[in-house]
Amino acid sequence: MGLEASHLTRKYYDAKRGEFLAVDDLSFSCGKGEIFGLLGPNGAGKTTTLRMLTTIIKPTSGSATINGFDVLKDPLAVRAQIGFASTDTGLYERLTPREILDYFARLSRYPAEKIAERIKELSATLQMDSFLDTRCEKLSTGMRQKVSLARALVHDPPVLILDEPTTGLDVITSNMLHGFIQNCRSLDKCILFSTHIMSEAEKLCDRIGIIHGGKLHAIGTLDELREKTGKHYLEDIFLSIVQEEVSETV
Image 1: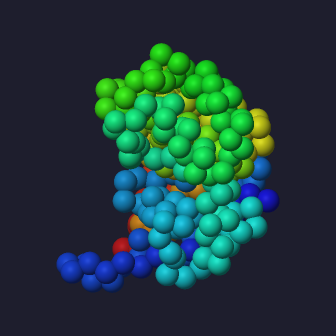
Image 2: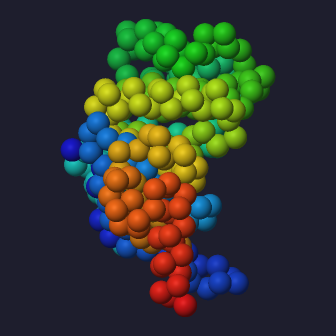
């Protein structure tokens, strides 16, 4: 089980551009105990893809399943299977992290008698103890991002979908979150990790999909992508693949 996307496509209409494809025929999968990196520049279609997988928006065509549940046919079951975190933390300013986590655990029907212990566990792991009872309006960017990640995980979902979760964070906080994500992989969770930071993908991901202009141009392990392009560093691999695709369309 895990996550599988098949020919996902999303069209939009813009007054200036007319109809355009934000995501164009995307297919990939991510299994249990795997971190799959969706790598691309801003505007590549990463966030639109993740929004389709999390049932926030519907695909124009194509399909996707999360642990066997169809995103179109059974969106409520899909939402129960996933934890979603992004750069937009969207926290309730007047609530404390403890109050937010308690609320979302109950909303996700996590066993009531286990909620306090689950919050304690996440707080210790994400180093949140010092601000667990501080209103979110007073928290730093790094603190808020930890709360956002804890909120996505409080119901212990088997699938994590992370949309550029370290953007804007300092090196120390980013490194701590990297370790936490790697630990989630060791717990056999399926993790879809979207980023435009090459070094982050190189460090964390078991397999990488390179997306540009809404299309998935390459997919594989880092060694497979190195063999495909003859390049060593992921930044050079990415540029090689993207520039090759661009030159073919000119």
